[in-house]
Image (cartoon, rainbow, N blue to C red; front, side, top):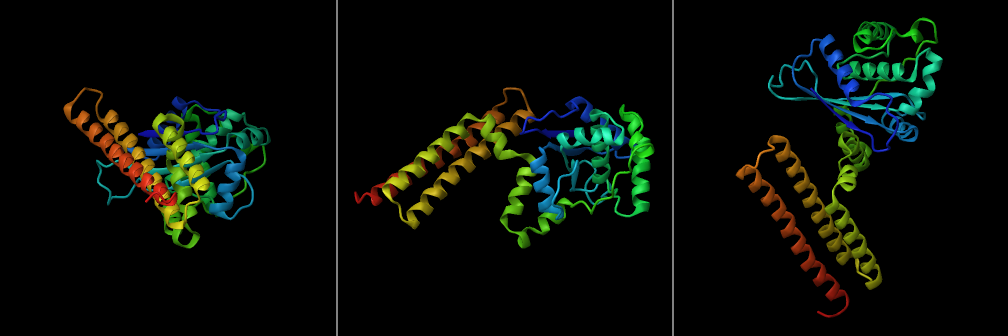
Length: 298
């Protein structure tokens, strides 16, 4: 099992990575999931959680947790040796910490509960109907002590948590992209990995290329490019950044596969880097031709 944790807003997560992995393992074991799975966990602030609820559930308010299912852990059509992408859990620690006292919990215990809750959603549980909610809450009560959290006083002495509208399945999100437009697909990409944001924060070459792209745009505004010239410049910039992102991904995959100095690993990295080099040279030549034409040099 692997848990991919994202905290781009640098929030207080209430749980450390080791405890998150432990809780996920406990839930999977309790539900009889023995195969290898991958889970994405993202921590977001209150505003982003509000936006996600509005986008995917039509609810104009924030919540504590959202779950996006992907592969079913019990899908017999998926080969047993293939890692399942179980789905995404989105937690809003600010909301969790604020609501915890009202349910008789500490912020940490409340966050443990929300993580268990989100995991059970990924495994097919829901709480739309009362009977579904009772089953799901019973499973939470059974699992929480195993995860190191104490029993949920919020369900015994405090107010009962409200039932929510159905949580979106990731498959449904992809199916709806035609109706809702390209922003939906972009949101899913950012939600799944935060890939572009991560690349900008961690990769120096991406920063350099973005700065070069901004300088190119400024130069284009000064020169006064026409529509066709702008399209050409934008495509070239996009291709170069795309190439560097692919190169970065390739390097990460090779490093994950082996830490040894293997000739094939070196070849893979060199070829990926060469593709960026070719794209960069091509884009530079095209850019020179575009600006030379705009300035009536050719």
